[in-house]
Structures are given as structure tokens and as C-alpha cells.
Length: 143
Image 1: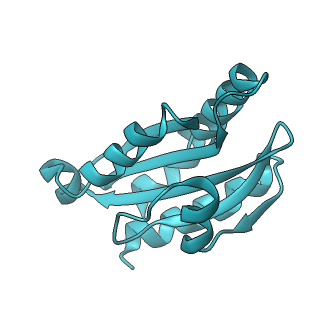
Image 2: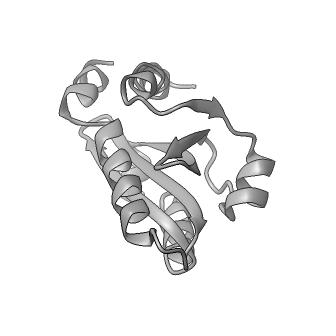
């Protein structure tokens, strides 16, 4: 694990309790079975969390600046999000930590079709955006 990824793990593990949602590690098999999300990158961090009383899968995927510049390594993650959006509640955020790298954050929840889809969409997007906010990204710039 490179220095950027190690610093990212530290930031994510510090931020998760600050955001107030119960969180637990999520095995890749559960990610696929329960949330329909495939593991598609060399390094992905997976967690299960609760938003608005529903289970969600949080995946944090770091890419080096070289990988981000090439885009090809990031494409499978982008395609996963695009595939899941019509079927499930999905929040996603791409965080550029130049010149260190780029981080994809996605939050995948229950299948669409419930009465509370709009509230869940909002909660998942807000979580994806708040995990690596400006203050959280600052230490990554110096890692």
C-alpha cells in the first residue's frame, strides 16, 4: 500500500465515526451478494453502514495520479456506478487530491422502488460528499 493509500485509510477510519453512522467492515462477497456491487479495482475499502435506517455499502477506491491521468484503471468503477444507478439507491463522489491522486466514494443501498427513494437518494449522496470534505482531504495533500 503506497503512502497516499495509507493516509486515505487513516482519514476514512477517522471520519466514519465522526459522521455518526454505525459502520462495520464489509467482505467483498457480501458487497456483491447484498448490494450488487462488484469489486473492480486493485484497492477498494468496503464498509457497511446505516443511513435513514437502511443498510448501505460504502466503497472507497483510491487511484494514484498516474492512474487518474490514464483513466483506464478508473473506468470499471465508473461503469459499476452507472450500472447500479437505475436499479439501486446510489450516492457517488469523485474527490481529486492533486497532485496525489483521485478517490472514488460510492454508497450503494437498497433496490429502487420504495416510498422513501428520494430521502435515501439524498442521504446516500450527502454521505458520499461529506466523507472526504475539504478538511478531511487536507492531510492527504501532505501524505
